[in-house]
Length: 214
Image 1 (spheres, one colour):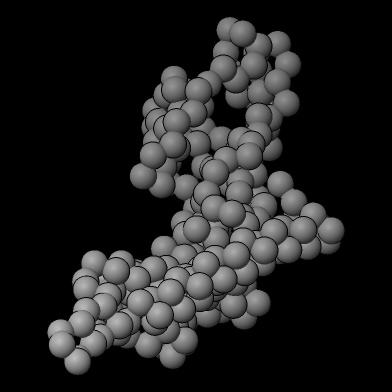
Image 2: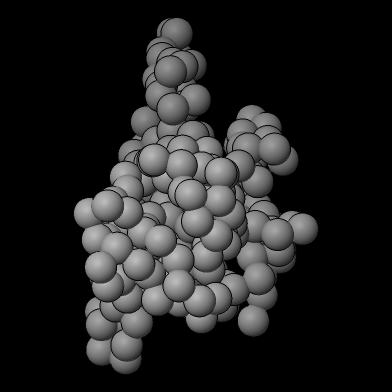
């Protein structure tokens, strides 16, 4: 299953039509991307991958859908020697791999720089990565949850603009009052946020029930 970013933008434009040109086309797209990022942090899934360690290289690219590391697995080590499919590889004077890992800009940096070459399994929390304008791993059910967050943020953008202006005035017999509309938008925004949080909790509960929980 996959979901096009453009389809999500079109759906959001239908659910929250622009008011006074807000959101703009670019803002609709950014709201969707930000909503997917938030959903990824709240409802990440477990994945297994491989890190190809090369002697003398410290930094490595992580998967595009990487959210956080769960575990970087060490091969079996006996008396300072790693037992690997590639053969015996010296580990360290400590008798095990002694390393620290830092994460930034989609990369993992290993300290000290590895003095070995080895395929190492990684277990990580994965979100939903955008590839060529498509969320390749996203289902329609997951997209529906993301849409709740996107609706909330779109309404919030409109509320910020509406709330910064004059809500009501009276000049003689002429009066104007849009506070009721603003309150209605605020209620809708809050409702969508509550629905989003509940949907995330339900989604995470399903993962725990059917497997794949971190």
